Image (tube, rainbow, N blue to C red; front, side):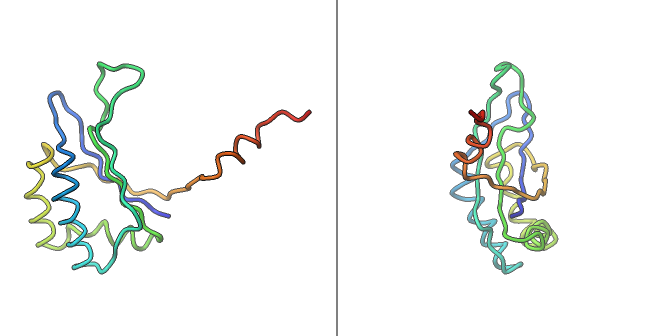
Length: 128
């Protein structure tokens, strides 16, 4: 699986309006993705709000992160080109001020999902 993550920078006083992001921006982005690229992510995950566990007063680099997961690298790379379509770039960029101070940093990665946690725990049990 492959992921494209949109990471929204955190600055002093920055805000992220999660409800607007989920109810307006994501549906618009998904519509534009399907319209121009004919693909759909397998799943979406949004992390917000974020907080610093070890140093609560220190700012984390990102106030929110949204991840779009795809079955293939080709789909993830195709998706990363959505802003190459004028309509998508114009519409999606126009919404930034409604939920965050500016555009996100974008990262792509291969994802290894580990779901059998019991096996991982058992692999480290001391042998008797």
